[in-house]
Amino acid sequence: MYNIAVCDGNLQDAAELGSMVRSMCLEMGASVSVDSFRTARALYEALKEKRYQLVFLEMEIGGMNGIDLAKKIRFQQGETDFIFVTAKEDYALAAYSVFPVGYILKRVTRKKLYEPLQRVLRRHMRLPTVLMQTPLGSEVSVRLHDIVYIEVFQTDLTVRCRHGSHHCAGSLGGVAKSLPAENFYRAHRNYIINLQYVKGIGRYFFLTDTDEKVPIAKNRYTEAHGIYEKYISN
Image (cartoon, rainbow, N blue to C red; front, side, top):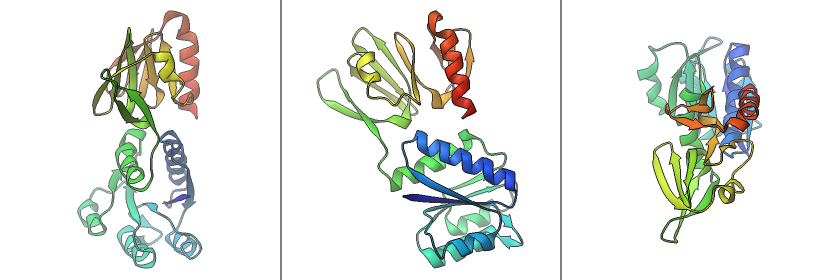
């Protein structure tokens, strides 16, 4: 089990961040345990019983500096990744003395959190992929959480990813069977969308966070709207 700790003196901020981290890890296919702490002392005591591979830290926690706490955790546990989550910009340079994975200013959003969290999980865990066939008959492995949407024209598939695209062969129906239904939705006979990257819905289209419009079939619009609302409320 990959253990993550969130330490923030603000109870609501800690709860929201913990929930967001847990949800995003599940979307990336990672099984994790997330514990929240309101004080540095509580976190430090927990370290006697449990090892945390990733720790989210506020910069000022109950009178203790987050950088000093990170140094203590490193001394006790060895290799631990840190992501600082704070409202204070002026500690950013000093924070890099403990080589954090990220320094995120509040309020935290999924967009701010995505890159550092993905980097940590990719390094420590084998994230799920889908095998697809190229037009020449070879296979390409595509990470599920990198896919924004998939488009088909006849038997030509374009897999649009966060950074570039893959050109593959096959049917959209065949690919759909390999994708987790909780994230991927067939919005149109020619399109499958990864709901993780949808930032809005319009009349007969999804708007991705790359500002692309993915069509929704007219007869699926009501269903698509309901599925999207349910997804963002989780």
